[in-house]
Amino acid sequence: MKGNNDQLSITQPQIISGIYKEYLEVGGSDLIGTNTFSSTAIAMADYEMEDYVYELNYEGARLAREACDEVTAKDPTKPRFVVGAIGPTNRTGSISPSVEDPSARNVTFDELVEAYFEQIVGLVDGGSDILMVETIFDTLNAKAALYAVGEYLEFTGLDIPVFVSGTLVDQSGRTLSGQTGEAFYASIRHAKPMCVGLNCALGAKHMTPFVEKLANCVECFLHVYSNAGLPNAMGGYEFFENGWLNMVGGCCGSTPPHIKAIREMSENYKPRKLPDVGRPKMWLSGLEDLVVDDVHNHLGLPFLNVGERCNISGSIRFKKLMMAGDYGTAMDIAKKQVEDGAHVIDINVDDGMLDGLAAMQKFVKIAVTEPEVSKVPFMLDASKFEIVLAGLKWCQGKCIVNSISLKVGEELFKEQATLLKKHGCAVVVMAFDEEGQAATAPEKVRICKRSYDILVNEVHFPPEDIIFDPNVLTIGTGMEEHANYGIDFINACKTIKEICPYVKISGGISNLSFGFRGVMKIRES
Image 1: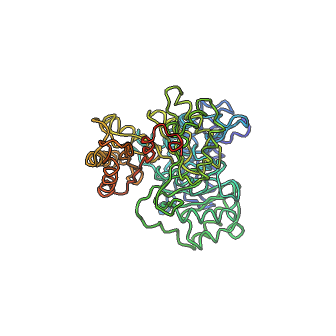
Image 2 (image 1 turned 135 degrees about the vertical axis):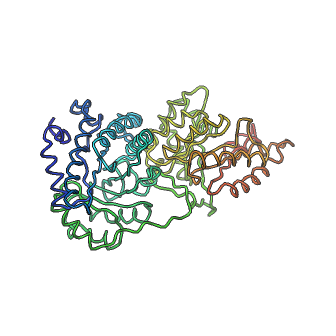
Image 3 (image 1 turned 90 degrees about the vertical axis):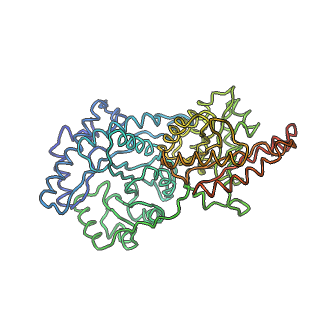
């Protein structure tokens, strides 16, 4: 039990209540975090206290609720709020615990979701006003927590504000799992947090350049609660003078007098103004963020280059490596694509002789540990939906899923799109429907418009995260019936962009290679 401070909410409730009240009364805090940082079944397994998870969260929140209500009753003009604290657990979904095996993990996305969901139930039942996923060192864990929050809110019909707080481990300005602050935000913004920011790890002085970067990109409120330090010693004035923050507080070592000093100092400054709403843009991430609308390729043209050499259908060499289980050399192919200017790496392991589910997961788990590869976003590509979904659960960044279409029927199409929306990814939508693949320009337009209307109006999928693939088909074959395929594709693209605002278009120009069967030098180029 030594070191398990969360259990004090049960064994020493008067001490925890006293601490809550001191921060409210002496510090003047508007919000207090619950004593539940480690109250998940995963973290409590170290103490063999998994069976007490609901009680730990319920009591931690209840004591905070009582303290806030008591202090609010003394001055109703200043209401106090309970923030349900959801910590990162002591395991990480993105980092291997084994130096010998980069594909090893000690926790899965689904296990994290289950643990977080149980915690959330106790926190809300105990009286939390806000849920905060905090001290995030691995964004995949945070995505699992936010997925659990979303499932809970959908199940209960409640609407509870969500705060998200990341931790940068050193002056590189990255999380432990390697993401920049901007990439971290791009990965979690689909959860629509009310407030995002940084806490712990670095003191406020060292946080300054990274807070500025977040202040320039975050679309919601922004906070900082750094480790202990008084305002004049911690560089905090710069935060306020530049109007970067909406909320400020203290983390490790911050006593009630610290909070009082920070509160008194911050009262002299205006809060950060929320940014103006602009044109929606597709915002992807690997270890670094990528705004697709702002991308230009090596020729200076506004095209996003997707590297397809890690695709069994697109590279014979990659196929041979995957069949041989040589993942290390396969990673070299991915690295070379990034070096050569690929903005996104496509991963496809579809082959009848390969276990696609296992291969996709192993490749992605290794790839996310390779900084030269995972700095760019991934496009997870498979003919079976369960394979892309399995790969998605190992990606901390915001990926593209390739693909879904209406060929499975409208209901399943909506189910798949809804699930992808919950995971926060972008999606490629093929110009297929129940009647088959679109060949002519009018058919491409009809299917894409129908798909768009379903996605945007019924599923509420962000239109800027939709990529239509209107099918280039087999050009360059010399066959008369294929002569118009290229023209039909170009004409369809123009109309689709006009009638489906904010969408992107993907063109599989590699289909040109079908016209050169047997000429391997050209096909492999």
